[in-house]
Image 1 (cartoon, rainbow, N blue to C red):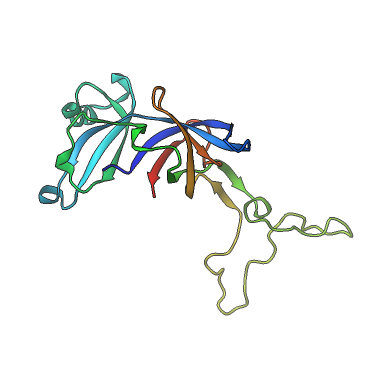
Image 2: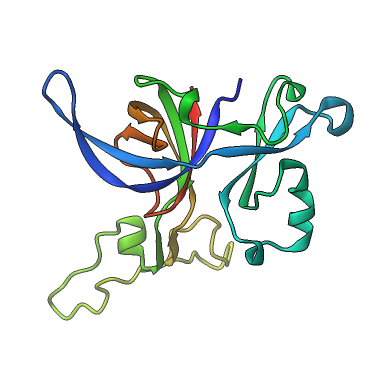
Length: 206
């Protein structure tokens, strides 16, 4: 049984549940995943299926990928992912996996890329308080001393410093599926999810 699927984040909304409470939800457009390859223990050393999603035009897929996708029909995909299963032979090439694997009330884990913030200083990136604003201080937003004495005479690893912020793999656990619309492949998950509009989400059952 497949326990995960992929989709694209659309945005946030709210649902009114039976108790009358307003629940914030994130809407995810589920991408129907088509089985394009089966990996077995005898041949590859493990059991998994490779699925493709995010349909692309012929001009946007190179020839090696086109040849790889022939077994799944005439469809071309921009993204390929592997899903571990107990028995890959129980799936057929070209088979579609969609949002029907979930039910309202299920608990899921969601993985995605967080929003990229670019190059950020220590106050934004790590929450430093900053220096004094008055009395002639010239260290308002700088990190301050980062070194040590002659021994060891180097900056220690792991020092919190300015650098690239965001755009990292982020996983949020134990989120509840509030609603599913199979006819339009929409799923509503309680709470906020990482990333911005059209970020690819991996939704897996717990």
